[in-house]
Length: 202
View (tube, rainbow, N blue to C red):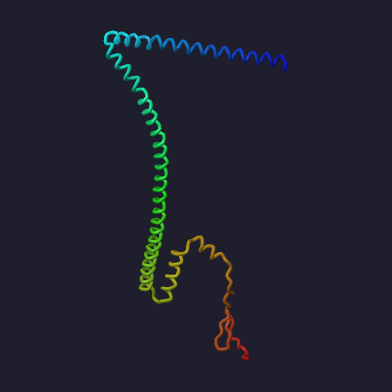
């Protein structure tokens, strides 16, 4: 070991010894102070009472000596009961609270499922009633049935299909061919702006 390290170790040892001696002297002085302030005056009071009533002092001393063991046993039992029963009660309470909250959560989930089903059924009934009312209104105000059906289909689509979905569907390319401008009437083809053109029959 280097001399510098040894000197540092000795310095730490000396400092620890000095700290321990200071703490020991502080504790000793505090104990002497407590003894002088509380213990000596009480002992003098007890001694004076014992001199004036020796029988009562003897009775109290003997009673305290005999009662020391039962009191210590009672305190030990009380502390043990508090620790054991209190800890067990805490664990039991935690289990019971967890079970009650879990049961309530399951009941809440079931209730929410029933409420959701009732909400869907009620919403479907209201939408159906509104559509029936609108169809009857359109049917009474339209001249023909196809016009009423066309207006009702447009309103039902706007009501039932979300706008984003309807725009997505409308933006898709059509899979059907555009209708031809040619109209066939009994082997005669008519085109827009063109006269009748005879068609050969097979």
